[in-house]
Length: 387
Length: 195
Image 1 (tube, one colour):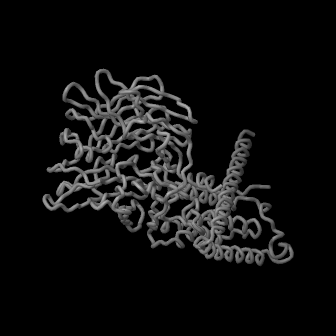
Image 2: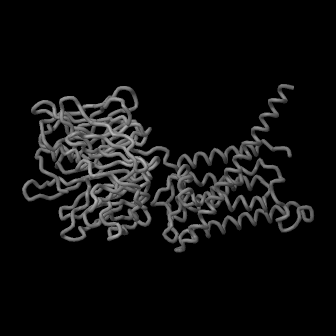
Image 3: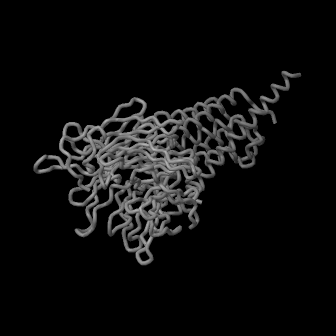
């Protein structure tokens, strides 16, 4: 067997290189939100709630979407928006609350030639609560899982608009995303026993599969985070007045560590992220300093005995409710950047100054924590959100 | 099995939901273009195994054109729809197999599967038949894969998944064979220089 190496070998090399180029071009090698960050903002001309895209290489922002909500007096009523990348990295999903409790969904293609898709989901009945937009999107493939009282979760096919779930079998299971971008975490209150049951939701059947339970000490208004690769669940718990981070695996408590800062009262959460190496939890914090000052920023909680790390971002006046639910933090896919957009936090928390209205990017890659601040034009009139 | 394929193909395909078929409600683990590439590679691999054409200059140019067609198609220089995306992938898969098979020795084809034994009729005629069979296989694939994918039956999804897995294995085998031949050639050159 004598191999023929030329010119056949050159052509075979062309074939191999073509295959490599094709695979690299087709596969999502990196998610765009590692370079580009979606964040809530305001239209500088009208003050309406908007979504912008910040490019970290060019340091420029591009306004993508503005939700004009008519108001009799001001002509503007800010509405709650949430924007996120779909797992394919080629589409942006923007959800905006409708004044009547319905929901608008917009799927914007990025880098692919497709039409923009718009879906409208009316409120199922007058007694139902509106869909919760405060929480991050739970998406698997082209399926979006939405949470709202009486229809938890409802699944929306972002290609066809088909709705499913939301019946008795899936009722009151709260859907949340997982770090892998594929698994859907499900949370269900245990009404008679108390506490909470956690597990996964099958994206195809919308069936809930229980993986374990946590007690009644989950801090109100905070949300657990689940890592599907190792089955760990972490949440902010209460021990009396003391906040603590708890990590559970296989039904057992793996770690409990108090969250304290000397002489200051802490509020943390409600969203938690696992760092990409799984060794640290990241969340937002608000620390009351003295009698009338508060500090907001990123809290890194090592899942070990190492000390807590606080990265301050901005300050405000003392408040009993920091409204951290509206901070919309996010961790990049490479785990090197943590971002927080404060447009809606600024609307809800009147103790904040216009300077705190910004997109903050915290670089986690080195020993220091350099912060990039992208200012958001605060609206002239601060009105509470429609959500 | 589906989850495994989705995971494995996730390394080589963007799995864009808007460009993915769902025969019978089953979401394929590959986008339409990649479905074409791997299904095409399987059919082309089987055809080369049984009716390998002699790589005449015309045959090489034709398969080179199949590879090049990915450029205007993949970059959306020409209008696209699901069938065209898939068919551009099939052409690419056929071109890949034809080029990657060029270095393989003649023993890597099963000549008994030709219409007749090569020695009994002129080689040119045998090659013409091989080319006809290959082109007929290509046209059949161009028509059948999109038809199968747009079929409402879940069994069509199963067939396509198996075909894509087979095509991916065929391409991996061809890449490994070429890598082995390259290493052997390099080793011979090194030993010749040392001598």
